[in-house]
Amino acid sequence: MIEMSVARIAEIVGGELADITAEQAEQTRVTGTVEFDSRAVGPGGLFLALPGARSDGHDFAATAVAAGAVAVLAARPVGVPAIVVRPEPGAADAASGALEHDTDGSGAAVLAALARLAAAVAVELSEGGLKIIGVTGSSGKTSTKDLLAAVLSPLGEVVAPPGSFNNELGHPWTVLRATTDTDYLILEMSARHPGNIAALAAIARPSIAVVLNVGTAHLGEFGSREVIARTKGELPQAVPSSGVVVLNADDTAVAAMAALTDARVVRVSREPGTTVDVWAGPVTLDELARPRFTLHTADGEVEIALAVHGDHQVSNALSAAAVALECGATLEQVAAALAGAGPVSRHRMQVSTRADGVTVINDAYNANPDSMRAGLKALAWMASDKTGDRRTGRRSWAVLGEMAELGEDAISEHDRIGRLAVRLDVSRLIVVGTGRSLGAMHHGAVMEGSWGAESTMVADADAALELLRAELQPGDVVLVKASNSAGLGALADAIASDSGGSR
Image (cartoon, rainbow, N blue to C red):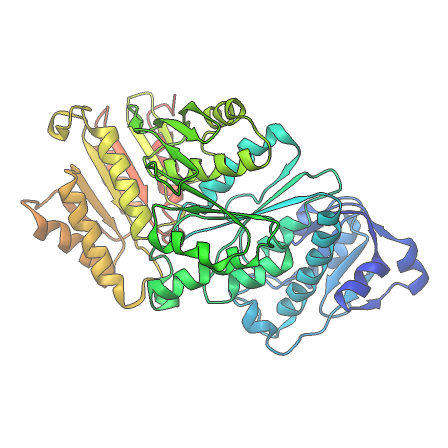
């Protein structure tokens, strides 16, 4: 964070000083990072006292100060220098997606104060030349964020969130990682309700926005794809007329968002077109489903060899390339950066090959119908013999858990995924967990074709691991995918580490 006095922070967030005098607050400066984990606090830091599943951050205020924090942002006095903020009407509802254990509104008050602090810092840094890039979409946000960080790093200092830190806590926390030395701030914007993206964009107004797709993630929360589209459209609406909006023209709902903004629109596509600005030539995949294509622009073209896996990464790479070109990168810089940008965030299309030749695709962090289809297609390609006849390739395993938050469409969407596994000739399907949705996935697979024992339901990840250890053969390909709540990431890690580890 930029250096700032405790008194100035209290003024910005509307807080009261506790266990520190006004004179001391003027002289005491936050020079370190803002942290919500007392174990991460360093000298000159600011500690956020937030409620958690097992403990309350207020109870660790003294520990944080002993570790070097100069003050605590809290909802009540904590016996050490603090800025105390009080709950505001409606704040608990606004913060509900980030704080599930906020029973008294204290966490909501601290989050609201954090947002105000981040907004003030974002304005100051933007006036100093910081370029803020916002990314949204039903799927692919984290992968695109990682690609953006890679293509912008040659141009200057980049701050981007770790993993999928994209909610009411992660968003302002990431903003406050930026300093006067930061050139590019990349922000991944997620939503569970209409208005969420607009609220995040108000904290740090982007000068460049990227909209990837409109799918069915969180369909149970939104109710319809049309509402999801309107919510994603909040991002381009937040960009000033002097900014740029990058839209995936292959998604009609995204393409229509050009009408929502006064900013200049850059369209990317997998096909050339009269209104397309950046597009990909014919796409080929190598043996690990890493895409190769020619990147075309009005100023030239360059060959691209991606280090990430899956045909779906082409659109993500096009969006990242478009942003980099807008920021002054050359085509050659973009190609070199993308070639070196392998998977960064854990459990997102991480591909490893064990010493016995078993390839594990760990995509267990999140899942919705669109990303599940993309993962299965990548699995099918890696297992195929690349002639189009999957029957003569490697054995393939799809270890799938629940896709959460699909509402009344959960049964039908899980059924479709089970049927797709059959159509793609996946050798074995392991459905992990119980419940109607997962039963529908197993039933859909059985009903789609001549499958019997090829589709198996197991109670939990331990049972799935036991089955895999008993039946995996050298050279098999395994996809592990589910919503994060299913907890299959550890299962994928265990499979990958068996038989001498990866190579």
